[in-house]
Length: 563
Image (cartoon, rainbow, N blue to C red):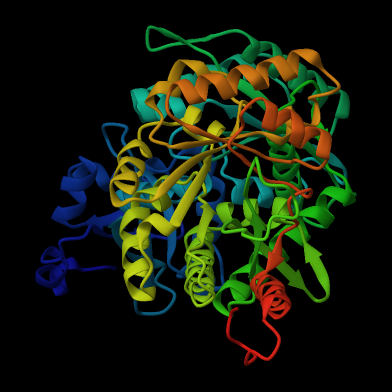
């Protein structure tokens, strides 16, 4: 029989609950003071109980099996169990047991460690690892794990529901308001109790997967209807727009992460196109374009660092001068890029530079090549002026005055030989970050032009506030001069209005002599387009200047000296 007096000092000193029970009838034989404090029973009460009395009913069968097991190694293997205290509190405990000697006496000693806090923390961390902190929905990785684990079977469709406008709400009113709006949308969409799997992909995309295509289409339709109305949250009404992309398993990916990525790509394609009439279903062509875009982003960064981007210069000539004018002293710098023999359109690689964070590096390269052109033209006796397109990116524009000043000093070029152009639409979208920088550029002497003028919606309302000295009429006006009388009238009015405000006017896209004559008649200041000259590299301009110099050398005069 167990005599606790032999071990009492050691066992009572333990801060952890310790007891001895009989494996034959599972009764408690003895318990230390830590056990009585932790569980709320006296030693006398323990001796009237079995170890099943402190277990939830669901665990009793397994406890009894292990207690009676002849396999001592299995019976004494440390395990985490749930115990009940006298007050009914449920504890998570780690129990380590050892059989007492002499062998066969049937007594077993148990050391009990309360791991409730640790278990709760572990569960909380596991929940955080698998769920979005704000919405409580599965994060993309956990959703992918569930789908790959067969939660929806062998076939399913997944929709990415992008809620456009959340970022603006967060920026203007705070993240808590944006989260409340998001939760209201989720609540409305989940009220039907569908069997779909839900997830959330920050910052603004609900992910919904269903094995039933009809159910998914119904959810997308419901989402469109929900976001067509203002969302009521935080005492206000918030208007969102839906952009939806759909991908399918296994057609669009061999595992769920690929399907999620394909649905996101389809949703972004809708957002870029500006339409939301129907969800965009992922196709192989979308995937090809995405892979090409990623490849070009990598290659563009390398090309910029290797200075493989070449700047071509298109002349901007006075309107009164014909296309035969020899003194072409003003140019627009235009980036050109060839990759593996393919000419990559600026319309393709400029947006990639902006989205990949390469705009500042690209702009710096263009500025340097433009300054080289200006200094080279100076050796020909030409004080050239080169205008440079500036991306509508706040960080780039903020650093532009400092960057231009440093580079112009480095190359020995006066700032008044440099011009910068920014599109009108960028100014309408955000006039906060550019106004100070462009005012500083003008103070430095840099020429400032508003490109693609007339394509925005509020031109006349802010024309008097433009920090510019030149506007460039968009080529769409010029192309419609003899097709649409209203466009011609608008073009003439814009020229008069700009002159009234002291601004020069440059017409873009001039390709026909008839257009040049009309613009000259309406007192447009300068012209740019294929009629005046195509964009060419600096070496072609210099070759033309050399040829012209050769033609004017007087007979007998040494070569290389002007007549």
